[in-house]
Image 1 (tube, helix red, strand yellow):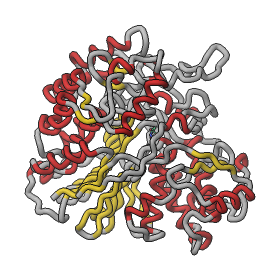
Image 2 (cartoon, protein in one colour):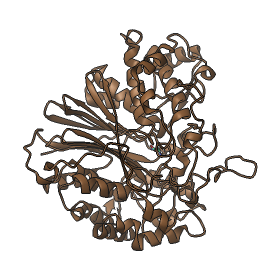
Image 3 (cartoon, rainbow, N blue to C red):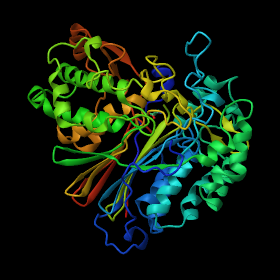
Image 4 (cartoon, protein in one colour):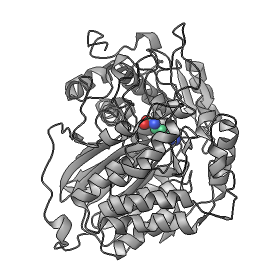
Amino acid sequence: MSLKFEQRVRSRMLGAFAAAALFVSTGFVESTPAYAKTDAQPAVLTASAVAVADKYAADTAEQIFKQGGNAVDAAVAIAFTLAVTYPEAGNIGGGGFMTLYVDHRPYFLDYRERAPLTATKNMYLDDKGEVIKGMSLYGHRAVGVPGTVAGMWEAQKRFGKLKWKQVLAPSIKYAQDGFEVDDQLQERRDAASKEFAGKTNFDLYFGGMKQGAVFKQPDLAATLQRIADGGAKGFYEGQTAQLIAESMRGHGLITERDLKEYKAVWRQPILASWNGYRIITAPPPSSGGIGLVQLLKMKADLKDKFDNVPLDSAQYIHLVAEIEKRVFADRAQYLGDPDFYKVPVAQLTNDDYILKRAQEVNPDTPSDTKSVLPGLGTSMPEKAETTHYSVVDKWGNAVSNTYTINGYFGSGVVAEGTGIVLNDEMDDFSSKPGVANMFGVVGSDANAIAPRKRPLSSMTPTILTKDDKVAMVIGTPGGSRIFTSIFQVISNVYDFRMPLPEAVGATRFHHQLLPPNTIFQEPYHKLDPEVVKALEDKGYKFTMQDFNGDIQAIRIDDTTPEPMADPRGRGVARVIR
Ligand code: DON
């Protein structure tokens, strides 16, 4: 079964929004369950399923499942395929997070990019201490050390059933033989081409892309082949590493040593109980899991205020904006890479703390933005394009993976001779305290640049379980909109009891403390003008944003998986028997 939707948002996000070198565990390494490699377990679901960003990735997943692969094999094969067929966001030149549920146990893999060894706190500031516009967004200096290949290698080695080469094979074929270019990809390429003109070598690689025509990437095929042959070393050492370092020389900071020292990290996922479900989601260096848990629990704490308030009514939007204000105040103050900064995770997800924050919500009028302070006090040490996919296999394992090169086509730099589009993830650091990044969010010293440090993310790959069985797998791109979008879909499904397709298709809106009392709405589903007027009368302002996520979700009803790809994108939902 394949669900494909015509309606799409054809726009580019940028225009809209304005250490531990070794395998550091944060205390949650569990041994690999034996069955993951043996296939001894009987199926517990009627089928496997995926919700992914394009049809090629769905075909790849189908091929992997037919070869006997599990959800992790499929997830890794999808990542490499999207690096070829969804080059605006799919990548091997970026990084991300993978939340897994394997043999009834939760895991989280952090393969976020790291700042290069010679990065410095003020590297994007001029002599006067002002942020140099665009420097963390375009070109070689915007690039963080990529983590995707290390992440995929770690995940597949630990939990996969197939051979590494088998999961690389579909991507190599798409790079070598080509794939047909979709109209949405073409539009994004055209926009990127304008944006990077005169700044990067983007057109050298993507200039020939034409809607409806087959696009081949021989350099990328050769790079993927080296990764297939050499594993992670095929990227982080040898010819690929040399080519990346060579393309950086004289322009950017990444060296062969940076690449060789890169490591992915298994971390303790955020675990929380909510509404009879267990939420398994992203810990720091993502802000998303903490944000999602705070949003869901604050909403539950305010049950009497939300009761009988219809979705998308002025009162609903006001109440959600009020809780979002509190979440973003905490995000700006306390969150950063936990290997560099002690993030108060337990305090920020503590039920009593969240209740206290919920009680600060003003049910009638917007709280004055300046009065909404970080909730733990400031005595704590003051120190956009992405894609998500969700996978379940018939054995009941699940993978929720979000990975990114940040803006569409990342920094616009293609490492010469490799076909690898390099990220602009350095923009997710706080270049200067209080100065907003591409997504309009600010940060403190917790998210200042330092060598080897990972920039703060909002990516929130999430799994919900009930009675130790997967109930939902969900995630989305969207920068700081990520966890507010996921929150709205989860709330639509479980609080408003909407069927999954409606819950994903419903209007989404966003508020993030700054700019003050500003609600972002989306062209896909505009808010009712009367609702807008009622909120304007309360003091809110409205801004149209071009992009509000591309949710890829799977809901499991007892033993039947129901995948759903966001109608806002070119994603595909497929049940695979
Ligand atoms: O890690 C983050 O939060 C951002 N770099 C994600 C960027 C993103 O979602 C762009 N997608 N549309």
